[in-house]
Length: 426
Image 1: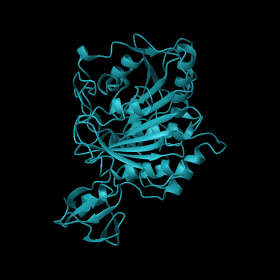
Image 2: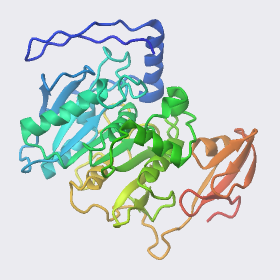
Image 3: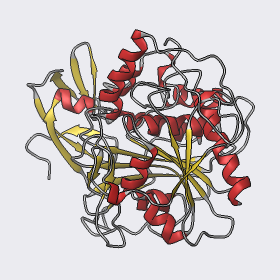
């Protein structure tokens, strides 16, 4: 990708940026396409009455090689040595839009942790995407990744944040950048939550659009090695990872949730069959958890039914509700910020299923059924294709031609294993 334009920014110190490059024509086309493919339609600004009043701009947090903006949300009653959650917005969004709608601020207020909202603009990418696909920004010590690391260091020194409790989450391009931060800085982040995002270093051997949709299928070992390559000398514990994805996401194909699971379970030395499954929240979100040798959740996958590309929220004042749907890509479903904060260990015990369908305690592996075209099954990661034909994932059963006309019902049991169940699925 040709060099992208960087903007000069005033700050507390008299600082002059290095050479400023203009975006080339091809870079503009890529960024515009990413707005549609990775961030969706252009978002309207959040209503002024809903602005995040507590969001503070930090003008000088370090050398900032990635030319990013830093914003901090400090709760009225912060905990002593507060934890830090870094939040990364999607394409065409902003730090303020994400703060206003994702619901994280409600739990920061309730539990006293600090929020750092990193922001990028059209000066970095024509569609305000984090450059997760660009080597100058997705490597340790470089570009945007290095700037986000500096934000964390500033939060520790300026606000007394606890360096042992640092977390990161993000949507779409921000979700892909979350993968970058977990791989490039495993010594900094204890855990992360990737929402509608992508495996780390997916673009090593293909382009960003292929990574997003239809997605790329690599072995767990290949994916894990890409994470290890991000910091070859690292020998410490790896971050825990939660993956959130809508089953009907047509922008970042749901198969990416599976590939993310493969990447991080392999990094942790775990298999790809879940140790525990459940259903959570009002929308019947299906949760798969993969436990380490101590019985702790190292990786989890949360598949939200019937939603497209966005951050799941559940507007309201109930204890398990949060967020707003005032702009695009915040989807009324389940308060993902509650469960993400719980996964980080910041909200106490929220692992009990919330209101809504519960799995039968005597049958934790109760089957789930899906009826769709072969094309849709492949896109959702329930089937694979070879030579123009379709095969059920797990069982390998033949399903016929790979197209939109052949339809089958697949039964999933256990999670990730599918069998053809036309006319017989409960």
